[in-house]
Amino acid sequence: MPIQDQVYDCLIIGGGPGGLTAAIYLRRFTRSVALVDKGNSRLRLIPVSHNYPGFPEGVPGNVLLGNLSVQLERYGGSVMPGEIVDLRIEDGLFVGDYAAEDAPEGELTRIRAHTVLLATGVADGGLPIENWREAIAFGSLRLCPVCDGFDVMDKRIAVATADTNPVGHALFMRTFSADVTLFERGSASMLNDEDRRRLDAAGVRLIESPLLSVTLDASMKPVLHTEDGEDYSADVFYPMLGEKARSNLAAKLGARTAQCEELLVDAHQATSVPGLYAIGDVTVGLNQIAVATGGAARAAVRIHNQLPPALRRPPIRPSPLRPASGGPAQAG
Ligand SMILES: Cc1cc2nc3c(=O)[nH]c(=O)nc-3n(C[C@H](O)[C@H](O)[C@H](O)COP(=O)(O)OP(=O)(O)OC[C@H]3O[C@@H](n4cnc5c(N)ncnc54)[C@H](O)[C@@H]3O)c2cc1C
Image 1: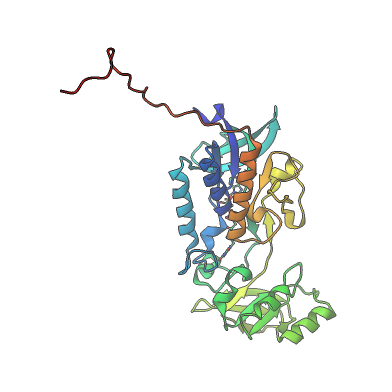
Image 2: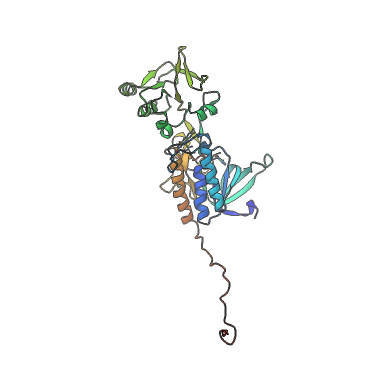
């Protein structure tokens, strides 16, 4: 049936680990699913994740993503490449405007669904380093202390102040190295006396001259340049630029958001809009693969239980053999 003629049980927007896991669960509950993905999962940036359970040697982000897609295909699901550019409610159904990746510009297909699961992730703040993709792949630029702090044990670690809790990440990194330096980002210090006292107590070096730029040396290590003309070498740099949740489709429908435009959800991943669920980085909470897949499990079970029951018909079996008239055939 053409996409626009169907009413799906669930439209999943975003095919990172969250969206793909939810689709696997829902397909295994025999639900019809349209999963649209624009292809920018943060997973693609991960050279190797060492904290996702079940992979003792670590797993490259794109391998995990590929495995999830193959698993979804086993249950008759697939990813529709492209973008949902608008989401609304019409006659009690969700309607998403789908711009397929290979469609002529401006051509949109309507996707109707009883429920929507938003798994659109976050957009990272602009990274201040040329060749930042290579630096991430090399491991000299890192975006997530919780993800890979263990992997930079005893290295020279540079951290920039974040907009909220400016010293928190530098203090967190002291678990992994005695050589942690915090760089102030702006000319007006974001730190108060208590922040300075905590840095001092933990032995974190503070560079107050504002960080102007970061370059990579010949061995791909970061060099941090400050306003006073000094250059500082490090092994790894955590820029802590912040992220912005891609929650606009839900916010337009009135879903409640918190800091960084992240969506507020209940214990079953439901937003404040009935029938609209959200999981993973786009929601309030820790940005981790395990959190996205855990949320996917919760949301999928809830969605399945809230939809009208999917009652299975009895299998079609050949009619039982009837004895031939005159009774059972006699042997011999
Ligand atoms: C460098 C790096 C290293 C990391 N390392 C780890 C690690 O080791 N361990 C760990 O647990 N976590 C790690 N993370 C975090 C992890 O990648 C995220 O927590 C995880 O990918 C979140 O999954 P998600 O499904 O919520 O979102 P994402 O994986 O970001 O997927 C969201 C998807 O939605 C799509 N999308 C957005 N808007 C639309 C739209 N309107 N229509 C269609 N599609 C849309 C995007 O293109 C994207 O493909 C790391 C992140 C980075 C950047």
